Length: 452
Image (cartoon, rainbow, N blue to C red; front, side, top):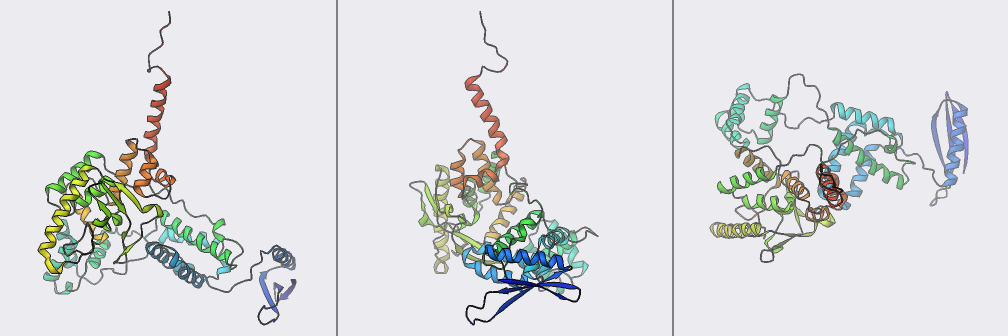
């Protein structure tokens, strides 16, 4: 490999002679440009020749970042879960390609990435595609009035359609956007992205650029020199209930003849994921033995529901059931059989333990919304449906159940994941450990050994 320094106007270039094309045998040259002095160009020539000798030389590419990321997403799609791919794709298109996608891949450096992160933190949230604009003040005021009276979004949409000609085609999504725009403080400025989201964008980019280095598109990963915002721990801010609050919710659910009462009980006593419980089939349950197996999950991506594999390899797992939960599931199965007889020939038998009256699978988002309404109706502290899983794990660790057992029941890939997410429980465990060991080797506090 040979190299030379060439001057063109006020700029110096380094011209590198590469190995001949292996197919055609033709001569190949690459130019590296942008050096202000001959000395800088000469240093770059020596560095490039040294990299070539070490096998680290990467030919300059003119590929745009947007083209590379689009190509990369297509390549990894078969290797990740559908939900993961959708999340990768949306973050790359919305937060990277839309901002710096026109940059050449070879020109992406730490400065460009830090500038991107700063932009996303300041004004990175994309506006909703459904803005709710175009409706009169009367429609907005009536919607606010109906929602304040406890009307659901669906019921509010129905009332608006019947009361206003202009609202004939209004949807729940449009109404929700209309209400959000009204609730936004005046002069609130651009919507910002949460640091955790920006940190996640950085994580995806790091993986993409790592593949670019491996494939010879880049000499090094620019994310290694970038400064993403601290994303915080996943456990930051999640809410849980204590045992009495959870008991009150389940009692309220049972007394109201809630069709999903057994579903809430199963989540509360096993810590299963929402999709795992929705994907549970009666063939996966052995009530006599008090066991069930998690073998599939319900996945919802952009309103499309499908059946997929558990989230992790350890997600395929057996779960022991307590006698009370077994009794609840027996009652639930009897009720579902009676319901099936009423539906008759229109029933779609998918074998699911929890389903719509016609037998088809429940939509995950709909179940979460129903849970929020039940919590509100019971006048309890707000909690997301995933909060039931967090509540189970927190109570289990506080009751000194071994973290390995908690990990296996939750289906986490490693025990480190479990202890990392629920690190907020560890201070209590440390206190108990200190008291327990001290009680074995020390006299009670405040008492001295009497000597004669």
